[in-house]
Length: 303
Image 1 (spheres, rainbow, N blue to C red):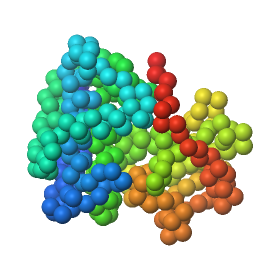
Image 2 (image 1 turned 90 degrees about the horizontal axis):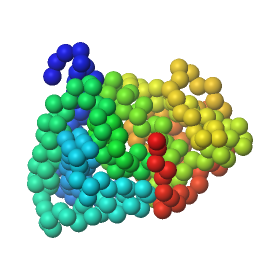
Image 3 (image 1 turned 90 degrees about the vertical axis):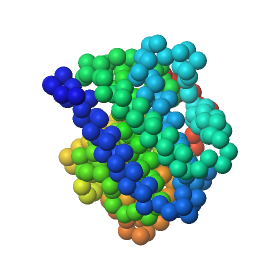
């Protein structure tokens, strides 16, 4: 792919190749025993390549290839977290019993090749063409670019989580990709902030009542500062050069991944000095913002 009309597609494809290569290098480190180790509360490491295989195929490659011609039966809408969990469980139930990780790795690479094939045919103008996206508030026909961005972000999040759970310190991708991925996932923190054994919403209404704002400062290569301000429409999140907020939480990428993906709790990381809290009193307000979510909550479909 070449030419000015394909610069965006080329950049997205290059990011995916970097992410896939990094994930492969992590998987290459794993022994047969490692593949059987727990990966969170419900999975083992061997489940991850299988999950990536059906996500890349069903949420990225097929929707881009078929566009508006995607069979209606495949135009599923996962409106709640419980529906998403049930869909994942259904896909795992379709995996042959006793399937070895080598087969799942083969399926994962086949799905990547499928993404490569359909994206190789795209021009930058094609990124605006409709592709079905099934998830939560973005469900429905969206620009094909949404599916490719999702593919990169989903791969990055699973790679970083697996890296930390495997005990590999330091990211495996360059700072440009790291920064782009952080800029994509951090605005979702108020929506669904994961903490060990449970999950919480970060209540913007409660924060607005107290005129409370905070910032997340990810230090190191690829990091940045993202400020969170409450409004009547929810949290307004944006990257800033410096934080002018009531609270700043500073941490490196590895620590951020630990808190986001059920690996360690914030109190332990603060005590260990891995998270720096700018103001203890403001932090006590921040902790009061967490509320339990309703996993049957139907996400409003974005226009």
